Amino acid sequence: MGVADGADGADGGNSAYGRRAFKRSKSHFTDRITADGRGGWPVVPGRYRLVVSRACPWASRSLVSRRLLGLEDALSLAVADPIQDDRSWRFTLDPDGRDPVLGIRYLSEAYDRRETDYPGGVSVPAIVDVPSGKLVTNDFQQITLDFATEWTALHREGAPDLYPRALRDEIDAVMTDVYEDVNNGVYRTGFATDQEEYEAACAGVFRRLDLLTPRLARQRYLVGDTITEADIRLFTTLVRFDAVYHGHFKCNRWKLAENEVLWAYVRDLYQTPGFGDTVDFDHIKRHYYQVHTGINPTGIVPLGPDLSGWLTPHHREELGGRPFGDGTPPGPVPADEEVPARGRP
Ligand SMILES: N[C@@H](CCC(=O)N[C@@H](CS)C(=O)NCC(=O)O)C(=O)O
Image (cartoon, rainbow, N blue to C red; front, side, top):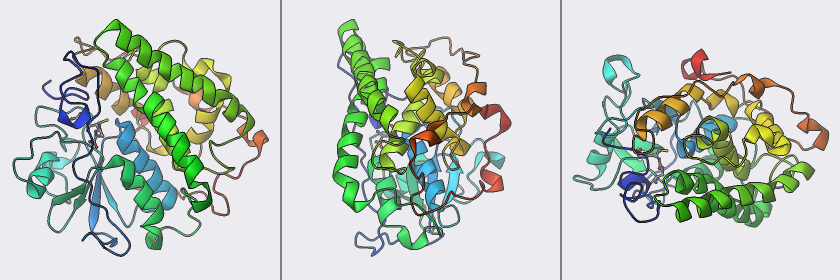
């Protein structure tokens, strides 16, 4: 496999298999879609298409946030095959291998329409302007913040406030630490190329999880008493932890299922409408184990872990908290977006 997370420009330069420490590259296309259209991309229902891989934790943030806010009708969804080829993300899950709305076979075609001969990697999540077929943004850090704050006119009735103004400083501080040590820390651990680098990154992952544990033993959610952007970002890493980060990325001091607090926290979110219904464990496992041939040369995908625990009672309601604040849970998943049975517990 020519292209792999951590092996190309989109996700850390050539460092995953080189001698330098793993370093995540910045998103290249950082245009924003805004309520007032100040950057040339106004929020308009039906104009844009969100392209994701359900394998990818960064893309999965946008899937969860889109569901919680009820943006499914306003912003359509393309799901890429979890296995990239040497032209990167492709629409081989769709009839004739083409995205039915954009009419393209590879996400790179939308990148090319935006910038010819763009030398960097192709990454998800990506938002594409349907009329022109051009990529607008692949800036995963900004995409969900803009869903919460710029797409408000299109939110469903009862949508939660995922980035409440009064809590932004605290949310930002928590997200910065979680990004460095956990979201990106698992990648630095998995793609480390020497022992020292691996040990430092792995220790950092568990140090941060140890620090989060007493906080989440006291309170149901990371910040305040409702679900916020901070929970979405921690969730998309934790939900992958035992399935891929523990084995494939060698983050194996303990399994999440061995930490009573974090395991209950992530199960609570998994069972909350808008979270677990976006998760495809089949895509997650096949992507990591088959694509990163540098660290798993046989491409063998393990059979475990057993997924049945995800649906067991978590008892987190006893901590109080109001998942959606003054709002309500999202409705059912649109029929054409349901995760196939093999990806679910
Ligand atoms: N560094 C990416 C963040 C998103 C990202 O790394 N996505 C991964 C999938 S988890 C990706 O698409 N990597 C390119 C590839 O694997 O071909 C960006 O520039 O926005």
